[in-house]
Image (cartoon, rainbow, N blue to C red; front, side, top):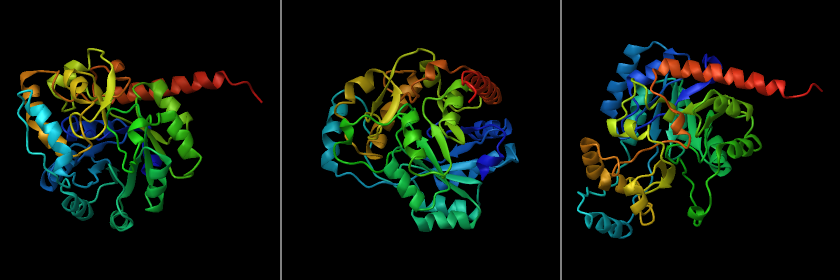
Length: 349
């Protein structure tokens, strides 16, 4: 297993849409962690280029993350929200559906394998997983509940990425039920305990709100083989994080879950757009993602942090502007100190 070989129990989260770069993936990997390159929103051709660029920067193994496709949303469920956005004077894009070049990306990763292929927004079929296994790739599936975990284990996933409610960016939920919007999503430590009680001994990678060595130690103590972190790397010089997001990461506002930007639940720093449109945004991904793309791009170009998605986990305020290798080193050192301190508080039997 890859998790048995990495020097540091730190996995780079695949932050699609900008922050994920070959440079960041390679830097985390070279520092002893495990880098995962985001493939979301990329064509198969562009992904192939980024894989090649990453290989030029490191000879170590790394992974690639794919977005599992969902189903189209009827236009009548989207139209009222589009009218609401248009009434503000913002440019609204075409609310189109696509599968994020799913088949072409799978074919690419079978023809040109990487060590790990992780999945968000769904679980690949047993046949798709077997194709990846046949070329030597491990399959990691992101889950947010025990029900999703059982689906992934049945499909023969090698590792489960347990995403807690604290995580920044999109929720990975793929088995939603009526009424779920009224239910609090499960926090990371609670989720880890639930999964440990139901899917043991499948290895777990903990994800959500971890930005310090103490947080990493807590994840390991809860039964994780490693932790997947995103926000803590967003201010690294190797990250492709936009200037407007980098600025927002220094301001300390609270976060909230919203569908306003993409039509899918995601955690971001609160701003005007999130506050004004969360209550009315429909569940329609990726249609809303494409509909809001022009106004978000315009906001990034103008430096308007009130109209762009500012994905971040709940503890992002602790993130510093440091090189990725230093971030990994500090996480490992802090983890070791925290675990040693915790052990001293336990009386001998």
